[in-house]
Amino acid sequence: QSALTQPASVSGSPGQSITISCTGTSSDVGGYNYVSWYQQHPGKAPKLMIYGVNKRPSGVSYRFSGSKSGNTASLTISGLRAEDEADYYCSSYTSSSTLWVFGGGTKLTVL
Amino acid sequence: EVQLLESGGGLVQPGGSLRLSCAASGFTLGSDAMSWVRQAPGKGLEWVSAIGSTGDNTYYADSGKGRFTISRDNSKHTLYLQMNSLRAEDTAVYYCAKGWWGGFDSWGQGTLVTVSS
Image (cartoon, rainbow over all chains, first blue to last red; front, side, top):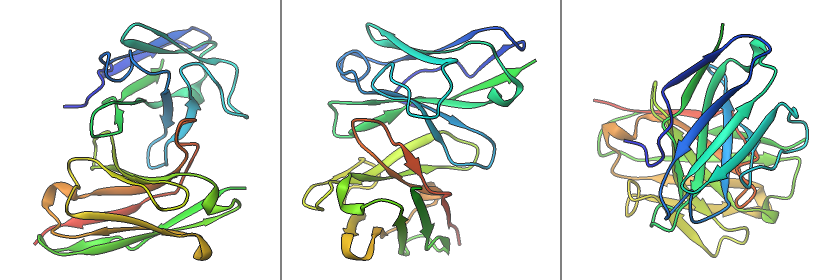
């Protein structure tokens, strides 16, 4: 069982917006602004999409945005495109002995 | 361009050992913390271990404490993970990743470790 809880799957049509949630506790998501989001296509390495809750690395599309409220972080993808279909993982720093925890991943299907 | 290239994976029997390597290029290895993150077949990501930029500080997930040792040789631009007493549940693709507070901003392609008799 993963430390952070994500929905197993979400779907949307091209052009629509979707939001993926990531729920933790006050020891991780709620306690620190060190939440990151990763995109992983099948057979590929993960790619950093959001860090520091809502910051986009250089080269990542403005269509990707992050936010946090209490113990839940969210990734929103607007203007869905076929190439956005992938697995998405959230991650957070944690005060536990395991410094970094991940969510179980969410499979995004673009209909 | 940052490049990370893992090697050293393979098939090992339960109780055996492996040393993974991660060759870094395109940046100064000593400038950032580095981590190992693994992914069991069909499963999610799991942080395994990290080391500070100078190598003085090391960190481990509970799953690898006492069995795994992370190290780095900045002069050789290489990160290592020594894995001992391997178990079936250690079977995974192991990625090296660069970064810390700003997220893991660069990843290698991964190396597969299979623990089986």
